[in-house]
Length: 546
Image: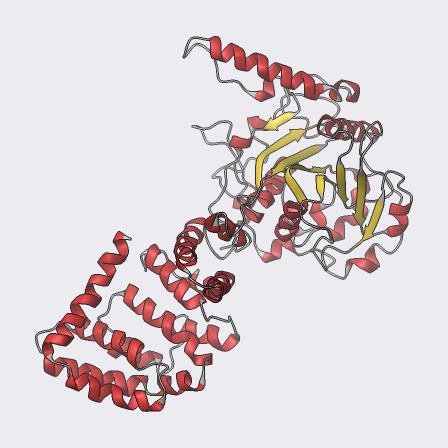
């Protein structure tokens, strides 16, 4: 659901957690001011004093840690890194997130949605920061960069905000305008690429120690995919620094800014940038911090209206486990960009797939599991419309995994899935009689498993498609056989066993085997069908204990 306008612009701190950096979408107030986590409390710091600050901070951190260790428990206030780093405004544990990707497609549209190539055809040699803000950003980079580092600058132009006294191994610039980049003497390599057309970065994994971006993310229509690519090309432990300002020079580029950026203030922009990290790769980024490097007055409202505001959202690339070393972690990262699924759904599905992967005895079986993983988001394009109160989440996940094994997401298959769930009008020849008459008394979880098995068959083999045409009359006859054998059974029991036998011994079989199904069923003794039912009814309890 798209948040209301008031929900989008609102953002306050909870009374119980005054340092939490909350989502702009979580609030009942209408304040547009940032949290206390962003308020400036120190005097202005010159760039020259920022450059060696890293060593000062490290010394102070050690000093504070020693003091804390020696202090009597309860007497020492927990150490806050902001006490020794006045530019640090949001600590890694201060972010507060919604359960799922909080943005709509419309928020990534722009006033000018035409191809960017024409818009940026003419070179513009314009500063993107004023002198003071630029020096502060250079100083911030200097705290973390060292000789021999490999740097990727995204959104590169004629000037880089990097310290000139560091001997970099390489500084690769990726931007839209080659003429602008050719004027930049810091760049050792230049790549012209429109990331809104092709978000894949043309570099090997772990190619860089740092990625720096300045006033560029607000023009990206696929930021989640871009952040995932940046995490891929950063080495484990490498830093991403995304800086932004709202200098007057940006007015010329206003038509190319995404709507989301224009809806928020600078403090909320910080949260947005961190959310791109969070939701692009939940296990791929760590130690996310927010910095305010603004020059000018550092008063009680955080310098939001200072002469040259400059903010940095920083994150560290975490190592991602390999598929063979940790199948669960690897698989869960593959779903990082699946905004259709909430985190609990991802975890439940991946737990099942991991168990299947670890039991797989051949590469062919593993390949099927990986294809199932790839198809999962397609199933949740539809399943996400079902309320969590309708079906127990573990059973929804199991049904999704079964469905995803052969689910293509085609228009026809999606329509069949929607019909089966009642999201589209059910066909009178199949889904209506199946749901309203032949499975009317079954538990919703059992119906979901039946749906998961049947839907892909509509685009399956010839035998599978042919068997679907015979499902309704065959299931009707099978239930009549079971009612004659067991007139004391509940209707739900008759429906459960008949559909289970239909799936295992009829659907997808060739015409000869299908023709023998009803005679075989009639030849079973009441004792045999009772044993089948008992075994099938125990399935749910066994599943819950796994």
